[in-house]
Length: 339
Ligand SMILES: C[S@@+](CC[C@H](N)C(=O)[O-])C[C@H]1O[C@@H](n2cnc3c(N)ncnc32)[C@H](O)[C@@H]1O
Image 1 (tube, rainbow, N blue to C red):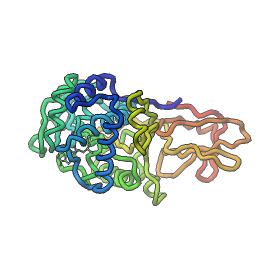
Image 2: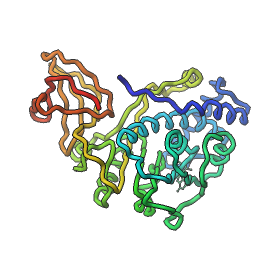
Image 3: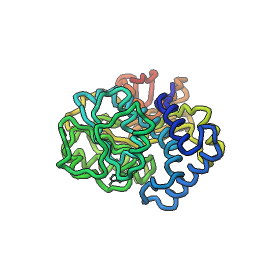
Image 4: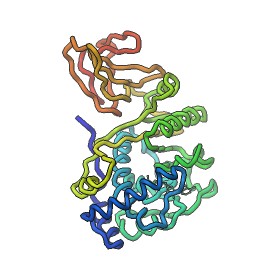
């Protein structure tokens, strides 16, 4: 069974109202796609440049493309976090580089947090306050520093696509109990996140997801090219599909790299995370899993007639008595169970 996500249902009305303020509707596929292409070209030409929020086309593109896509990715991550009880005891969220409050909007669906949003541009705050009445922030700030931290022991610091411009999290974030870091699943950003994971472990944080262990990351230490990333299926509405017809990029599945860490240790679970897609090889199928510092694969030998494809990113139980370890392969002798 695949993991399918879309953006929160309440966005539809908000997007309709917000686009109306630009004399647009969700059905203006060509005009919306033109804005998306303009912002995408801008980022291709200037990958390090800040989001040009002062431009109308950038606001439209964020509303109808990046917000729905990032919110769907974040819903997948929040679902994993909830499975592990990651939010227990947390009361505040600092959403750094909040943009259109993407992460806060998703977190506020089920969790009663108090939200501080840090966003250097003024336009996103105006759009959210005008068109997203379902969400209330405690405050929006243009900059942030340690003296503004209210209750770090109960605070989750969120960096959703806002670390790309930074080489490390800011000093104040190291005082927060919990961290949610989400990055584009590119090789460069993904591997940078794995290096940051090691630094955070060294500083006393514990990893809650996606890792099920706190050893060195095998994707970082055993390979020069791998990076850890998750994938969800995007349940795109009709208007999005129509807009996408005008675009060179398609989004049937969405990938993302993420880390959930806390100062409190996570409950140990005897599980592995599936970190690869199924690879079809001669005589067997393999999928990479992660449960320790070793780079390991589940292997289904064709002769056993056990056929399984496990979605990337889910947790599975490894029955020690029903797998045969051969080099870096765990040969499956009985169907693997998802957690
Ligand atoms: C790529 S957007 C991500 C927006 C949103 N978090 C999301 O997940 O869709 C990065 C945002 O971070 C903001 N930003 C970058 N550096 C910042 C800083 N030092 N202080 C406050 N905001 C910052 C930018 O203005 C931009 O809106």
